[in-house]
Length: 460
Image 1 (cartoon, rainbow, N blue to C red):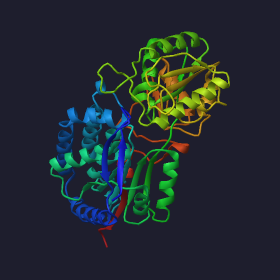
Image 2 (image 1 turned 180 degrees about the vertical axis):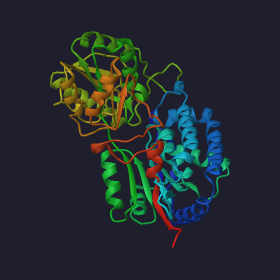
Image 3 (image 1 turned 180 degrees about the horizontal axis):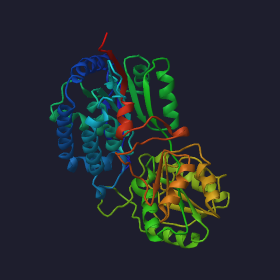
């Protein structure tokens, strides 16, 4: 029997092992989902919301068990309490928004006709979720997909196998109709086969650019819709009028929270020359406050990376940057910080440029480069000099100036004086190699439904 093994970054042990579903079990799950979805589509939006809020309560009740599970699975320190705050905010918002977002659109009146446009569920939504924010990223599509009348099949990352099981337990406790949500453990080959089968109506994938290309290739010719949130290299621009202490505290957190393993984490910072020295001094001092260690220890503020190979990639980026003239500022001693270990210290680099991997390729770890810029023009040119575009943040006290800069930045979200946040009232989307589609808000519901026009001639 084929199995999936989860190697914990905490101590290298096999934390969980699960058998992959058989091909027959996957086919049966799809059949159950199709049958359940046909009935679910007839359930009122208000009633669907009751089920989803019951699911939320069931999931939140498990949080004391979920938090240490996350530490063992992907290394996030227990002190941060898991992801329940964001899960609750997004779930409650999307449930409350559903009636409005899914309401029929009625164009201007035309005598003798009744005309309107409805949003119909797509059918079966296949969510392929990542390990870095395993609950939040899954909720982004699962909750609105179900609220919109779809069935959902979840394939969670091998690094966070227990998360899929927690979702299943919570939906079962909420008494969601059988077959409407199903968690499956699948191999890559089985995933590609299902995507190419023509039996899935939409796939939502969060992961690497290479993974997104594999999804598109596997789904080619099926005409299914796709939501792809892929790589990122999110920039920040700190202007001379920024509130410096606020910018430093938030950008350090944006760079290093979750050990830098965040799609919208800050990976490169451009600072106006007028405040550059003060910014770097403060940023370095704040970074040195991190305590790297066992994530099960309440004192730890930065745990290991999810896998040793991710940490080794950060070590390679740092070494290459130093060879090319970059300056490292932290020099923190961390136990087990060596090649082949997931534990490593956060790092801040200056004297960097865009010929260095650390300023061009997604790091997805606790390293950040800081560059001095002369003016807005140079900052915008550098911010846009990337194959990615998920979020970008501007740090200034001038809202109109920030908005004008944002119009020129190639990105999915423009922040001012904050970063590393998903607002469920807007849309979570990207440009360029970061992907396509969008989650959350009215647009998120639009991407999980199809339009259906009614053109009814009443007077003959």
